[in-house]
Image 1: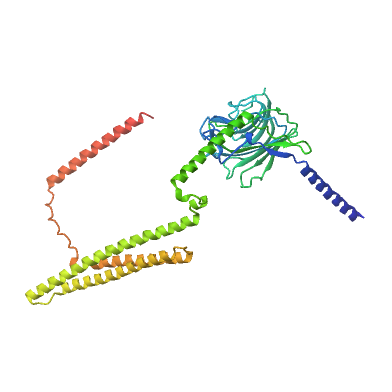
Image 2: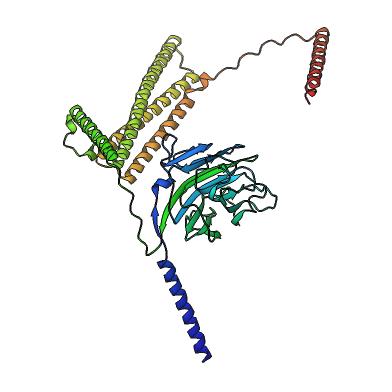
Length: 493
């Protein structure tokens, strides 16, 4: 009986949990993205402005983010929505980075919902005595209690002055300790105001997972103005950090079972007519450009637009062929140069042979051993040049055949093998040229060492004494000059 009672209790508990989970899923509010109160990259800013937002102070918008304050001392800046928001329930998702060189930073970053725009002021770059709520990411420990960096929620009815000395701890409605500086990924904050309850969730930025949120704090019975502006501000002090906001996404929440808010009102008739006129003008200009292009290029009429552009495969194939053509031209140039060298070498050998025969005829003696060595060396050079020219010619022919065979397409293996063969032939050419250079410098052409110049006369004693005295005077003068300079420099300390 006891076992049955225990099993029944477990089943009841499981059923209750399932029922609660279903009820919580059914009670999830409806979310609608509000683009006029949000911003996000990669096309965040145009011409230094942010659509539907205004920035002040040292805030610098860019294509990917907004730098609220740079890492310079005593800077402050902010961004605010241009139009007010009158949502009963809402949720904001903010992605930001706070980075600096030091172990501690200052002062911090704040996310606002206030009845009026706090464009400038002493509270993290925004106005004090605000009417609304501020979520502060405080990075500097003003009270010395070692409780920073921290996330602090502070409400205000427009009459309280923020307590800087105590980091707002005397006015905080909720707080949690979170280190949000110098994280590998952007830190994310999800702030939800639903049924008069403000909830703050934090993603610490340790992983790229965007939904890896942790509970930070919760404030019940939170009363905020029915209409207000969203804003983000930051400030630096004696220490400085870069405060960068990557995105601010606002969602309007609607309770389940209630009628969804109507879509935004249509554009006024005047604006519709204006946009329609601009579109027609643009369309006429585009048609005019098309007609001018067809007149200038009658050969491309009737062709699909895709055929006018080069595909990725065609571009790669064209680059391969251009590379082969360049190699072909270089090898042809090398072949012509080798032919010229070979002709000169043959003329040189013929001249030497004629000269030897003339001398032998006049003296009646056989040519000497040195001349035989010169002749044999030149003949070997000729043979090497012939082999080298044949190798280059074979490379040219092989490259030309490879180009004709690969007009329709170029296989990966054949291409690699083809270039490897060309590389091998070029190495052979290089080795042969080095061998020719070594052989061409024969024993008869060895450079002779120049004769040594005559030794100078010995130094006399008088000259030696004069040189020593001059060096001593120069050393003493330099020492006195250095001492005067050091004495003059000490006057500034």
